[in-house]
Structure formats: structure tokens, C-alpha cells
Image 1 (cartoon, rainbow, N blue to C red):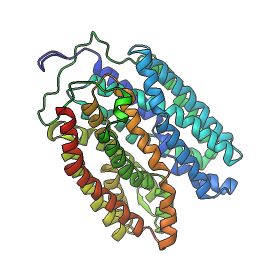
Image 2: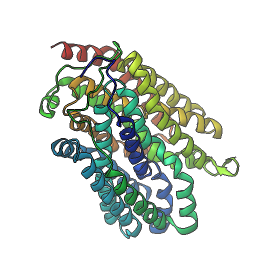
Image 3: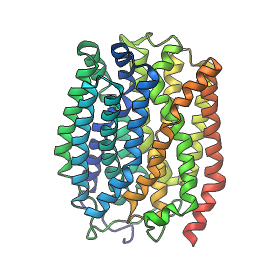
Image 4: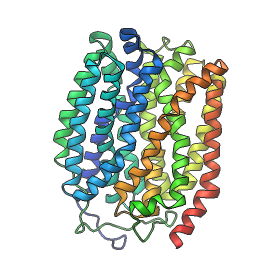
Length: 418
């Protein structure tokens, strides 16, 4: 590290763009999933619950295996690690969606989802890990742009996938998009690298963002109470957002508005999916950049506070088509930033040397939260509607606001003073 006036190394913005592109190419693995649920159910009569378990398996493998991918990248080094990991991920993405296309049982659907999740996780961990290393001076923004590719990338494919499903069947959509994404990822992977010791990186320019002067090993991170506090906070926010992601189509259907035509012949569901994907993606660089200026915890409080209000309003007015789109968009806008704020906070706290592995350890919280998603259906069925589900999500957001301001902030300060 040198003083802030030192020119940053050439090529880091190119690497960031390649990372964003890689994330765009795996975005619809998660965010277009809802388009496949009902067509699969009509074809095979597997039931929503059985099909949604495949979504949970995808999210679990996409997150819980990322620490291994991160350790693999860190071990191979900055030049080989990112290239090998993303190429490996691209191959698995193609195989996974191909298996989904030909699955004639839930077992094969689950296997395909697990393989695709493993590939997506390798790519996600690599790209986020590189971003936090390349940009210590703009860590929130860089991670936000990278994660934003994953959050907003599906907006580019929602209509093409929807059209392909309608015209050729969901099997063709799985096959064509899976293979296409895999091939492009193989090409992109060969241009990736992380910063080497010869790359001189600038220091953080803002006094609002404290960064650790030492790098903690993954074992030390797992022994730190502040890591587990961040983990619990991540799970709480992620579970509410994943519930909205996985259940958007069923929620709209249960409200009786899924077939409503809103704009230029587009249905409410397609409009909502595009709006949600765009806002989910924009949230990550927006709140990441804000956190670079005012601090991570203050930004969490603002975002999750607005999220709580959005869930409450959706419980009251969600049956109105335009309010459904607007409030759903706000929920995605105030949920997606966890994927920029938490990796940035983790690297600020525990240092950059093992950042790919450490951020991946925290990212497994998303996998844990995925298995809370089916509880939303149980709560909905037990109460007769989605209102209680949304109110529980609002309460979870408010609890995390309090934890960020009054528990996480002083805990991190004490650790970094030690």
C-alpha cells in the first residue's frame, strides 16, 4: 500500500468489467428461476414445493461450497486462480442447466441444480474476491458493481427466456441458455487475474471506513464473534429477499394480478421481474458507493429501514398491480445491497490477503437462508395469506438495523483497535 496519490495499477477497471460480465452470465440461474416453476409443474406435476426445493439446493451449493472455491483461488495465486475457477464454473453451469433440460424426475432436477450451483458459486466467489482486492479505495462500489452484475443481469434475459419457454418449452430454455452461458464464460475466464504483489494499490481515502491493518486467516475469522454476528444479520436479510425472489410468480398469482397487462402488452409478472432485477442490481453499486462515504453500518441502517417499510406497505397494498411492482422493486433495491455491504465489511474487518476465502465464508449465510424460504409457504398457508409473511420480513429488517448500529459497529471498532 502507498499514499492515496499513488496512481492505481493499470487494468483494474478492465478486470472489474470482466468480473461483472461473468456475474451477468450466471444471473438467470437464480433470478429467472421463477419462470420455470409453473411450466415444470404443468409438465411433470411435481408440485411447487418439490420444484422449489431444487431452488434451495441451487442456492445452498452456490453458497456453501464457495469457501472451497475461494481457498482454491487463493492457493493457486492471482494469475492462475481466477482463470481456472471461472472456467471450471462455466463448464458446470452448462452441465447443470443441460441436466435440468432433460430431467424426468425430481432427483435429476436436484442433481442439475446442485451442479449449476457449484459452478455459479465458483464464479461468484472468484469475482467478488478479486473486486475487494483490486479496489481497497472503492471497495463498496467495486463489490457493488460486481454483485450488481449478478443481481441485474437477469433483466437482459427475462424476456428471451420467457419467449423461449412459451414457444419451445422450458426444456429448450434450460438447454440453450445453459450451453451459451457456459461457452462465453470459458472465453472470459482466460482474461481474468487478481492483483499481484507488484501491483501498487491506493489506500482507502475516507475516514468513515476503517480498515484492518492485519489480515486474518480463515481459521481466525471463524473464531471471531463479530463474524458470526455478521452471519446472523446476513441470514435474516437474505431469507426475506430470497423468499421474494423464489415466490414472486406464486405471490402475484395468489393476489390474482399475475395476468394483468401493464405496459406495451407485457404482463405484470414480466414487468415486475425486469424492474426487480434492475433495481436489485443498481442497489449494489449504489449502496456500496454510499458506504464508502458514510460507513458500512450507517448504510445498512438506511437500506434495511427502507426495506422494512416496503415489506409492511406490500402487506397492505400488494393487491394493486402498480403498487405490487413499485413496492416489490423497493424490496429488491433494499435487499440486493447485502451482497456489496457484507463482503466489503468482512474485508475491511479481516484484511485483504485471504479476502476471497473469508468473504466466501460469510456468503454461505445465503445458503443457510435458502432453507428458510419454504417456511414462507407454511406461514402463508397457516395464516391464509402473504400479509403475515411480509410483516415477519419487515420485523427481521428492523432487528438487523438495530444490530448494525448498536452491536456490529462497536464490536468491529474494538477488534480493529486490538
